[in-house]
Length: 172
Image (cartoon, rainbow, N blue to C red; front, side):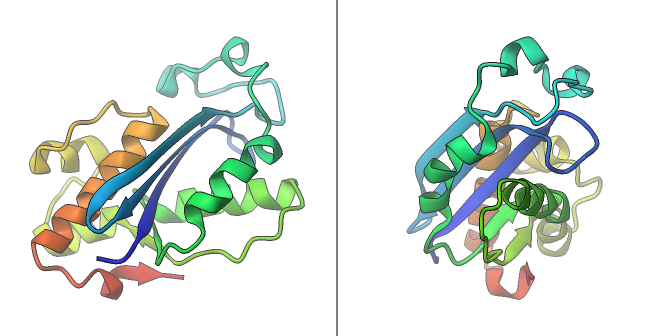
């Protein structure tokens, strides 16, 4: 299995540049090799989704900004064959918006959506992350970015063990 990363953001508001937490898990040789988690100070102090992820402005005001943590994230993604995410279109949109807002040049990696993967490999419905994790017996603390990222990594590993040709599930 190729080296890949799994990524999850939590956001503060409806705009995609409002990341307030990030989790990145790197998988090498079919095993979790690296875990990274950080809170992120969002660009605006109004946090609208505290009821989802439990993070409020008081938790985030002293956190590093996205440009400040990017030097820790970039090397994790470098050299990865793809980035896995549950609802990859959302996560890739947040990544692109945050890097654009920070004037960071990014060649977007191919993304693999674990929602689609779960439907195609196991025929799972519903495919919310807690439902997929329950079906595959993957531990999860939902809406904790590092736990969500690790769950996505473990979904990809499980699909590979199941015999799925992961490359067939990549999207631009």
